[in-house]
Length: 632
Image (cartoon, rainbow, N blue to C red; front, side, top):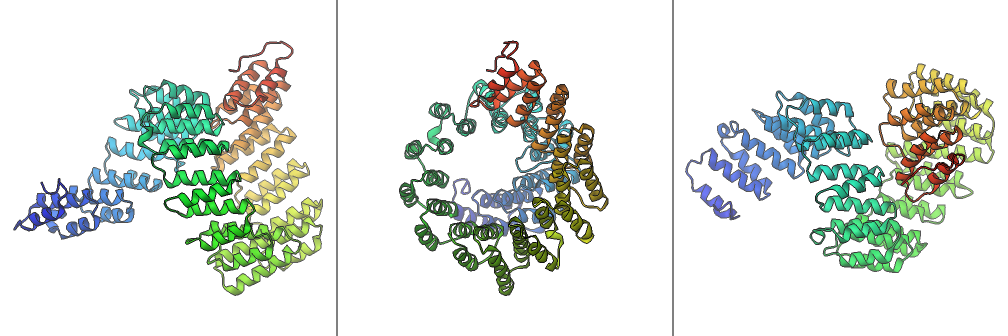
């Protein structure tokens, strides 16, 4: 009774008055602490329970695991799970859900595979990992798990739809959605979000309008989608008809972001004033809107009006002052910041104006990171004596005893910058002297090869590469020599270099295959391009990018195999973008394929409502027949 009304002291007094509390009394007290968020007291109670009661009661263990996981204490939850003498299906399901919540997807799937037995909840829980934004597991594995579920509830179907969507398989996502025995507002919203995030405005709009009811999440995503394409009127209309909008600031923030993307500061201010509760996110969006449009006085007023400041808001204000050219004000603001991070320091380095001032900020940093090192290199690149300053900077870092990782990164970055800068000025011998003096040449071989190639000295570049066989364990070096052959139009030699690269055990990356595919495409070598494309996906397990698919589509379609190009697009593991449809449409214009061209034009127009290029191209396609297709 006392526990239900929140009287913890009275409940604890009653418990202490029991001479020999049984397992039910212990569980009531334990659950009381858990329900009130008192995890420390709950843990003490759990440890004080008689061993014979605690170890025989799986419910108490599960309650503790769930409580710590829910509050973000994953390691404690895992320790409890490992110490648990008798695990039940509920225990396994609880820890799997905790791992997924903490974005430990691989660990969640491994736990599922180790379970001695499963139930419907187990499969549904782990299937959610495949439908999570942060996990890129195989959609085939997700489908196999889905097919093996003894029962499929709405959550399982929703996770499967989401998994298809994350892999860009919109047709499969829609097919799974249509097969569902029953739909919920969560499922409908999930599919709508997939369409919206993929840029399929018409499909997202049609599904949104067909939904029996809307809630804050679905409306907010539609507002963001319309804002991203500049359709502010539609975004505003959805906002004005939203139920519950006064109950949650999410919808206001979504509309605020929509007008921010459009640069409409006056509308942003009106929305901010109407918000019942202004959180930090909304204030930061407003602040960035002012700063990015040059309204620094209003930005300062907005910053001062904020109820509290965090790193995001302070950095937004600092970046705004720097971008507006108010260097003095930016430095004063920086000096007054209670907490600075790498972004803050990097902003000041970029805004320094001179390499000397940038060096001062860089030297004062408590710890260097990639962002600050990159900003410092940019500062050196902007001055005449940047090479000499870069050398001196590295010597200072070594004397100061910088951590090994930062030293190695900056040493390599500065060295490559100096080499390329000298090459850019035509000082090939000076650049070569620096390279010859480096003890570890492997990370810089590519820079010398690229420098020689840019200056037209391809023979020297190849001679240098072939001489340093001990440095040919770096993918960048091989990419540079493959690019050299591709630049010369020597496709056979580029392919041969890729073959030698593989023989030496150096794995190619996405850039390697992009260069090879582009080279084969330019030469019209379909068979060789297709062989490299398949090797990338099958042999090396690399996921083909949109640009790589586009190269293949362009090659096949340009040679008149328009139907094959369409099949290739249909087999893409993600939704084609505007550039892909434009590639196919261009080939249809060249080969006078009006049927395929009109289809490509409609797909292109759906993704880019504000562009007239699809209409212009299809007009040229159908000019002879005067048979213009209806695109909208």
